[in-house]
Length: 320
Image 1 (cartoon, rainbow, N blue to C red):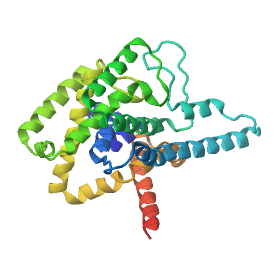
Image 2 (tube, rainbow, N blue to C red):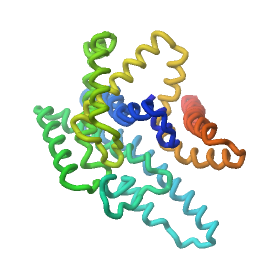
Image 3 (cartoon, rainbow, N blue to C red):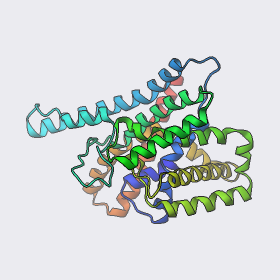
Image 4 (cartoon, rainbow, N blue to C red):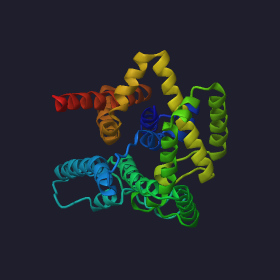
């Protein structure tokens, strides 16, 4: 469901309340879900823990970025007849892993760094560092104090400068709060609360109020609305509500949940490939004369269906 909202936004589709309220949880829910599913094996060293996360997240990040860079370098070289433009800004953007150098509120020159359809990949490096920071925090005796100090440092940085640090360094303590909320949600008593109407009512009221107070957010650009703290509440309560909807669908409409599950298992592939697919689909839609509405529908559907199908085929072969 979070990925669905991401595709809507990246397809430049505005559905009023759907995209506004969806924008409150569409990125936080991935950090919450990562915390919910995170398991540290007993006796596992921090080094092994980090190595495992790096292989999956950083492997996908640099592998996808390298393929995109190579594609556009070859395309531009063929079109211009020159093989000298190495797209150095794009290379710098890959290693910096931020779409822009400064926040959206910055009034000076704010160059786009991730300009080869790899802008969504910022999440992978941010997620890796979130795992890394959580690994440190969870091994500390005063973990909640460390969490609070980290959030305080993020708040001070955000309100002191418009500079966005590489790999979302300044925001990692904030993302870790979403992550920890997922860890808390995994506890049985907390999960059972999502089936209680009174608790869902409280979550919904807090979510609606904090969303209105926060205003539009964009985590990738360091935009936390009107308040970072309110943003944390809106993102957490919205994500927990998504979990509640998922639990309800599992009970009431199992076939629909199977479709969500199929796509949900391929979110990494969808995240890495959808912008490139969007480019191809837009080209085909323009050639066929599709209107704006039909083009958007095909973009979102193609962004879901194609990577999900490819992922299922690849996973099926790997199991055999």
